[in-house]
Each structure stands twice: as structure tokens, then as C-alpha cells.
Image 1 (cartoon, rainbow, N blue to C red):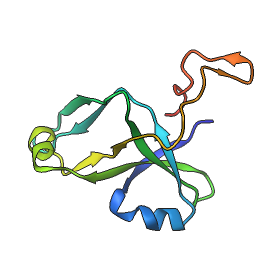
Image 2 (tube, helix red, strand yellow; image 1 turned 90 degrees about the horizontal axis):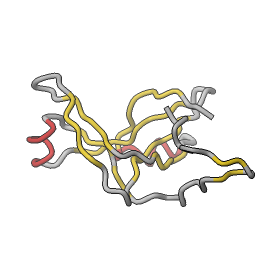
Image 3 (tube, rainbow, N blue to C red; image 1 turned 90 degrees about the vertical axis):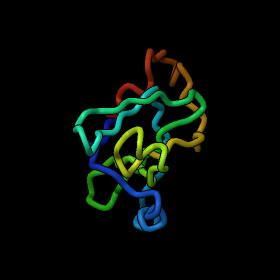
Length: 114
């Protein structure tokens, strides 16, 4: 199932989102980018293989909407990315999907997330 990406949810507000029925998700990614507030250019970085991007499924509007959970950037990250917010990269809440689901092999089971 595909969900519509609808922006960001601050890590500092996660309890509010969860009280409104939000569902935390593991979003496996290899890389991410932030857009520099100074240059407007994307600044890329790799994600360690043991971490995932934390997502939040917002179910308040009737149509589930996918939000990326962010946190405040450290001083080092602010200098590198030139952006005050960073995606929350964390250990997975759930085990990864098996490469074979319901007897059908999948080449990339996470490719349909966005």
C-alpha cells in the first residue's frame, strides 16, 4: 500500500501525534538529503545499515498521510547541512520484511513506500 507523503512531524511532538492515533513506522533508506537554507542545494549523507528513518502515519484526516519524523540538528549537523532539522534515524521498531511474502518473492519490498 502506498501512502501520500505529507510533510514532517517533530520528534518533540510525537506524544501528541500518537495520542491522535498516529502510528510509528520504520522506513528503510540508504541515504537522505536536507536542503541547505543558505544555498538551496541538497546536502546528502549515507545512513548506517542498522538504522531506519522514523516515519509516522497520520490517520486523523481519513486518508492516512505519511510524515517524516525530525529532530533538532546538532551544531555539527547545522554547520554541515545548513538546516535546523534532521530526519530521525534510529534502530528499527520491527524486523524487516522477509524477501518472500505470502509465497511471492519480492525484489525490493520497500520500493512502494513513496
